[in-house]
Image (cartoon, rainbow, N blue to C red):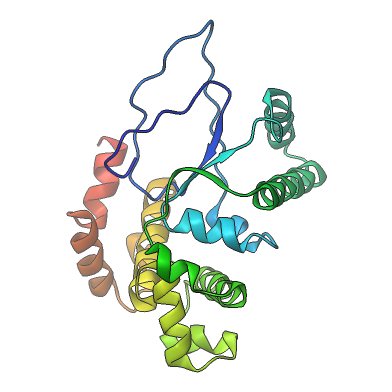
Amino acid sequence: MDGADFTVERGQLVFFWANVSHQLGDVEAIGEPELCNIYIPLDMFLMMPHLAELQMALLNGAMVVCPSELCGHEMLMRWHSDYRAANTERLDILKMELNVLFRRMEVQGLQMIKQPWANKKAAHNLASAHIRHVVAMVRYVFENLGQPMQNENVTSITGLHPNYALNIFSKAMNIPLKQFILRMRLLRARGLLLESDMAISKVATESGFGSTSQFYAHFAAAYGMPPNQLRINYMGT
């Protein structure tokens, strides 16, 4: 992950932000190996309450280990069953149980096998109230990606001076707010390209780009190819 090798032991559950470049290197068979992946939409995760520490750690590239006593094989199988049931109430319970698990992980102290990217001293100096402001700004970005958005729109929700809000965001996220917004727009666009047959002009609009030409320019700069080529490569046609 992120250019380095990490070993996940048998029975361990590890959480990380899937936007960080990662690849499964090898699985050592012990009996019949079983690999379980849980994909939680980032916007759903960011809307979970009381998780500022974990949210900031994962958004900054950390790999966090769940203590084995908090989540075992039986719980994972129950979550899988709830998810496959396509029942609204069971899905809601699943989300609540995930939130409780994450909160217990924070209470016990986060165990990491990969530390966050952000400068540890800068992150340590941010008060918990400031971290909550950063999470609120990140949520706002996700909730409004399809709309025109300037820095002042995002910072205004904190009640802080705009420059001060931008400063704590950059310290916590290790990236300027404007660049973060662009990165999130590109991630949404990439998801829409690969997971739907939506017209590229519509993808651009839904991802918050002002024009198709602007979208093409930013996308090609980020992914090394225009959006139509990415879709062609993915579909294999």
